[in-house]
Each structure stands twice: as structure tokens, then as C-alpha cells.
Image 1 (cartoon, rainbow, N blue to C red):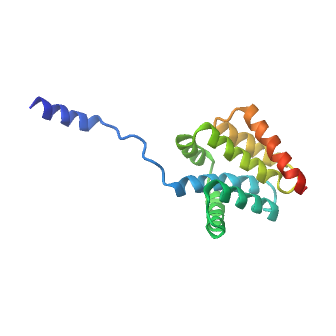
Image 2: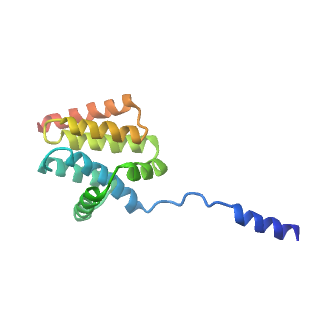
Image 3: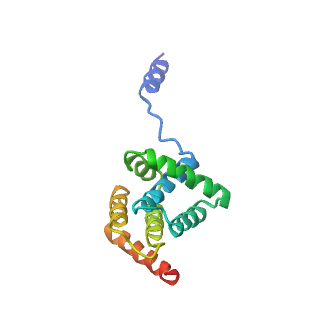
Length: 154
């Protein structure tokens, strides 16, 4: 009898742990953040789009067609989003510090893809790095790596 009562009360107050996220949800959240960097300037350039496609393909091991579909969907989601909090919260819940830094570095790569870093791009990167709890020094190191990697193409 006591065991039954204990089980009953236990089931009432048990809170399930965080469920593993749908991998597509993490992919979409990452893609939306890359799109936000692309949208920071007046128009989305071909070089920035290509950099975002490369970053997504490398990070998630998707086919070119899957990445193109993902990025297209992310553009629509980014257009409708009122803020970035929903995306960064999801990444904070399911990615470790190193994985979040890789997202920030991919964002820097997109920002440098067209050969110049606009003030709005820099602001988006600063804001997202802060929301992802990436240390400023780590974000700046990622920026320098992305800038150096983009230099041969510039």
C-alpha cells in the first residue's frame, strides 16, 4: 500500500528530462542564424549563400540538395522570426561550448564571404555569440580564423 502511494506521488511530481532534439530542429536553428548574417546587409550575395551552404554541409553531413532545401526553409523562418532567442535557446540546451563556438565561427565565415564585414553583420555576430554564451575572446579568435580562411578568396 505504501509503495502504491509512493509510486502515485512519484508519478505526479516526476518531471521528464529534456528530450533529445530532432536533429532537423538543430539544423534549422543553425541555418537560421547563418541566414541572419546574410540578411544583415541590403541583399543576400551569392558568396554569402555559398559560404552558408558549405558550412551547413560540413557541419551536418547533408547532400547539396538537402542543404539547399534547409537554407531555403531557414530563409523563410528567419523572415517570420521576431527574435533569435528561440534558436539560440535550443542550441544552448543541446550543444556544448565547442559546438556553439563552431556555429559562431561559421557565422563569421558567412560574414567575411563577400570580402567585407558590415557593421550590421558584426552586430548580429556579437549578439548571437552573447546569446550562445560564447566568450568574447573565443568569438574574436573564431573571427580571426574565419577572416584568415576567407583571405585567399578575397
